[in-house]
Image 1: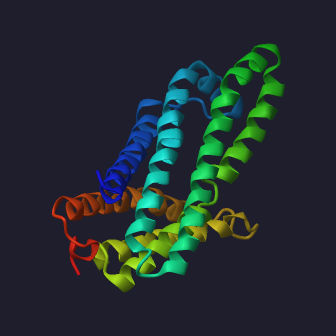
Image 2 (image 1 turned 180 degrees about the vertical axis):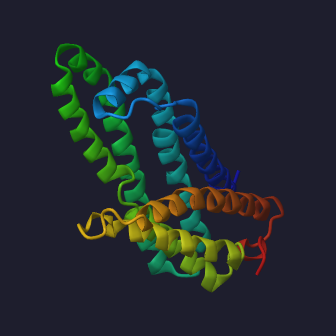
Image 3 (image 1 turned 60 degrees about the vertical axis):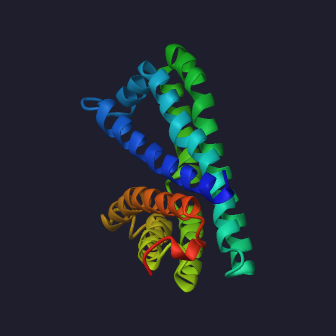
Length: 233
């Protein structure tokens, strides 16, 4: 398979990992009634194997698929804007690193937390809160790195019409939503519901973007066309 087809398959896989994560963490794992930090931690420990498997999919699998997509996007767009795509590639690999790091931190914390919880629940809760802050800082509390990568490749795509402009305009909307999450830490904005909306747009919007880009990349490769002819212009 060509790198373009591999990138398309990777993009579709990323969209599927997002769908899997939403179904698992918001559907199957019912945390209702565990509305205090202590009860929630106990719930996580009781279901740690499920959480472990979930993070392997949404973190580890996603990261490797993203690595392939970043490489494929660079190969497809580097002739349109060489320097900008070099920047995008660096940012994309940074995104891979932080998602992988946050996932591995969470995965390695599960068994120690279970041990600490049996010995001293309050101490385990403090450790859990610390891990949560670290994981959120790297893997999703602020979506800036992923948003900048998405904005960059979408801007190049719009200018060159590679894969068609509509999908890249959507990428701009999703990317801007991700950038806005940077400001959620400001004290006078911390409780603003806008940031829940922008986080949701970035998360759900990526599913649509990944799936559309994946299909377009594979379709272009299957028909042996130039990337720019693969989508609507």
